[in-house]
Image (spheres, rainbow, N blue to C red):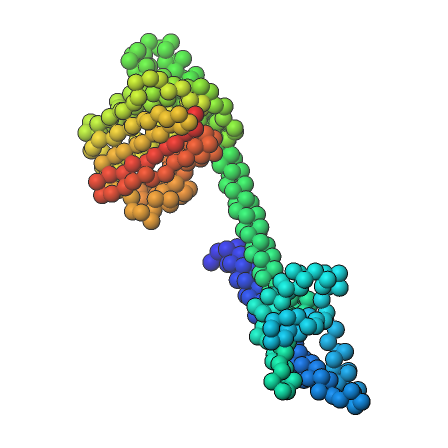
Length: 378
């Protein structure tokens, strides 16, 4: 079991459960307070009715006065049958002088709660409107603020974890590449020495040329790994020329039944590239295509030139890639080969997206073949 992943998911689950639990608890309290405020207003309406019905010479009950005075925080309005405001309480003292503001408050109250009808007798009625107290309003908003804070917190944690993972991956790529370049350096130096000895020993020239080619190839691979391990320099490069040069190299080393077709615009395309690394991209993509076609079929490389970008399509006649694997093929370690490392396309993605700031993805795929598209900015 991967305990790191388990603990990460457990943390997220606890945070979400805690947020939902707190939200439910706050909503429950809000509901109870809202009910309590409604009961208080109803009691206030009864007391108001009693005061209106008391005779001028009759003494007002102290309890009724206490009930009326007890509401010092819930905003209320009294409205007659003609929708005229005849009284109010617990509203902003400065703004109540503005009739427009007062009418807006009344409309808010009408939306929040149904009015309480106070029957004064003899066919006279007035209506009591009220709205939630400031404290209750804040409490109603609080669960949503709390939920938002938790969501933001989880997003920040996720992005931090993602950034940490990427940094770890980058450092691993750099360390692996530098070590590979270093390990290749010593045997190449030794091979160069042996080549010079062979030249002095009257060895067949054709054989020496082949050995020299292989050594040059090893030096090129070493250079590529050293560039992966550092920030490579991009330079203006003729895209058509570098693709043609790489395909010429691959044609000689590909199975006889593999055919290459190139489609270029007429004019040259100059774009900022790192030639050794971009050649590596072409080699990896074509080798994958050859494997997918079992060494038999056509590989088409089509270049389309636009004002701000260039599109390069690598198409083959292989068995295709399932749609749910379109992104997986670029992940380190993913392979369908028995003895594959699953690093080729991962390297390609890194070279295109990290070093050349471009994009690479499966453009289309079916049992008749696959097209992988590269987009590079000009």
